[in-house]
Image 1 (cartoon, rainbow, N blue to C red):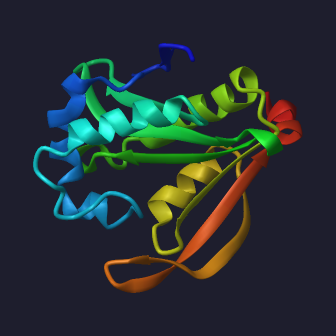
Image 2: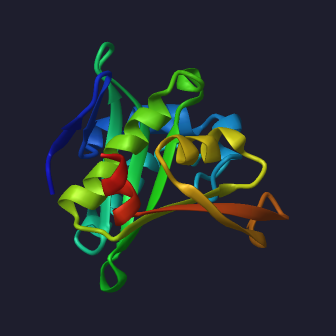
Amino acid sequence: MEKCLETARLFLRRLELGDADRVEELASDYELAKTTLNVPHPYPEGSAADFIRSMWAAEEKELVAFAVVEKESESLIGIINIKQTIAYKRGELGYWIGRPYWGKGYGTEAARAMVAYGFVTLGLNKVFAGAFADNPGSWRIMEKVGMKHEGTWRQHAMRDGRFVDLAYYGLLREEYEREE
């Protein structure tokens, strides 16, 4: 796996244990946590280092995970990953960006770089992603990177004790290559 990807305003690099405090700081925000399936709230104090270690362990299997770092401030502003299903040459894109950085295009910029990484470096045939159907900020990122809405999985997951719909988007290699 490459150590770092670079965009106009961001570095995407491997997570480090030194990122734990910043991950915990950003992930502790309820407004962020409620937009994800896997970020707990309240975020358990001191657990970000274990989360980072779990990402490293998953990297040995089929996960590629990066810290999203703003170049100007050199601050971690989020996390992005692709979980591969190697047998089918597909990968599920997942991401979160800290709330202070919402609405600035960072999520789209990072997602565009990861989609390219998925096709060019990982050799995937499809990159897809899901978001809560009531989270337009996330699914608009998917649209901006060229993904097409493939369907909504009704009451497919549970968050905060309630069933939630997930909107799924996907991009095929042939579509990606036409746009490049």
